Amino acid sequence: MTVGIDMGRTSGGQAGILDLEELLATRLLVQGNSGSGKSHLLRRLMEQSAPWVQQAVIDPEGDFVTLADRFGHLVIDAAEHSEAALQRAADRVRAHRVSVVLNLEGLDADGQMRHAAAFLGGLFDAERDHWSPMLVVVDEAQLFAPAAAGEVSDEARRASLGAMANLMSRGRKRGLAGIIATQRLAKLAKNVAAEASNFLMGRTFLDIDMARAADLLGIERRQAEMFRDLPRGSFVALGPALSRRPVTIQIGVVETTSRGTTPSLIPLPRTVPEDAKELILAAAAEPDPVLRPPPRRPAPAPAPDILAQLAQARPAMPAPRAEPEPSAEERAARKRKLEEILRQVLAEPEAAFRNTSVLYQDFLVRLRIHAVPGKPPEIPAFRRMLAVARAGISAEAAEGEAWQRIEARAHALPEDVQGVYLLIARAALEGAPCPSDDTIAQAYGTRSAGRARRVLAYMEEQGAIVCRTDGQGRRIIALVELGHETGAG
Image (cartoon, rainbow, N blue to C red; front, side, top):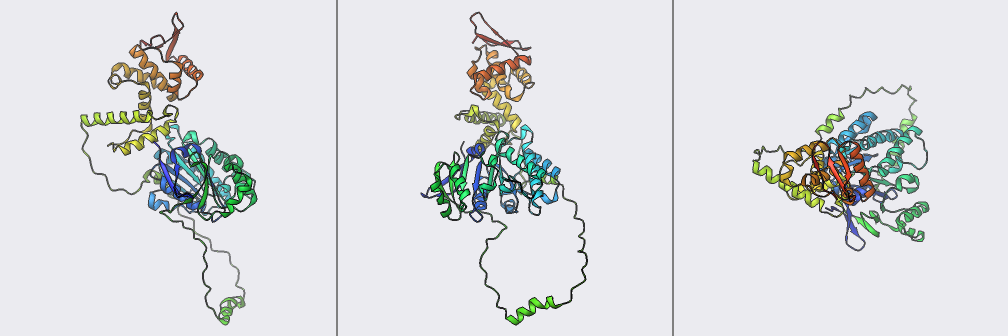
């Protein structure tokens, strides 16, 4: 299922739609000088996608903390927590699927780099069961992935740059979709910027930045002058999640506001020169005071337990009403509905080759659309449902004792090969011909027949199956200890 995010209006008056599912796989780079509307664009994107996907914001200026009041984001003040605590908190964020804003305001540049690196590392190193889709927005990305060394320590720079590179280059397989915004492309590390496939380029004045933006968008450098003429809030969009050709989008309005202010002219107070002299120079004429050491501030109160905050962080909701226990008929009807929706998910083109986390997100969205009652299955249960569905076993056979023994044997294998084992087991249980290499490859999530044969060899090494051929060279697979084998195929 495709979820379209309305980012605003194109120059032709049409809706500027961003494909959220495609964005999760291809990442986004936003560039524009100060005042071009980058923060407004990021806020629009996060507000529109908040109901659909988990979010984490790396916020160096504290501009996005207002998302908490409207959308229930948890605000983590990085200055109050150690790097180790932030790394543990990031792991809990993924486990509980809580949207967060990491507020780095109040830390110096070195501290911002270290704390951001620790938090991003925690998101990246989460357990495989917690790899659900997540947008990771990094504002002022040039601070965390600088192109050249600055005044910060080499250790902090290496840690931050490594975390950003992991997010943009290896985060997709872990469900992390990096969205980075920068004032200047020339200040952003090239190995980080190069991993984005979608671009939103705003107003830019320096020649080096315009030339690099033109290269990323695939337009001629003589056309780069267009970036100087872009009004505030307008961006040239290109990428698989946005448009196949460069198109200008005027970003729409937002529901929340930034804590920062836009500079505006204020009339000067009417002060008589004599009064001004009294106000300013009277203090200068006083004798110099005796310099005393600045008062020592009391030690700050101990920081609250961030892990407890994460466990309790949920938008305020009314207490749920106690519902009666569903009857056996209702449970059976709900199970049939879940199986029907799962079949719809698998019927989508390319579903066999999509990541399990992406399929799970599609499954949850369809549950909400069909208003299926009850708590949705967790991702481990979804993986078991997915393996059974891909095996093609009937509902009646799945309840039988023979299939229960087969599932118990499959649990001893790694998750990525369980679907292949169940596919072969179904054929063996029904006495059907052995599945072909192409069928096994599709169950494994690949198009490579060679990889399918390697999976069979691996399962044979683990003692789960035995492969042999008949007199005509056709393959037969037997299930070890279960007494079933496929027909020749």
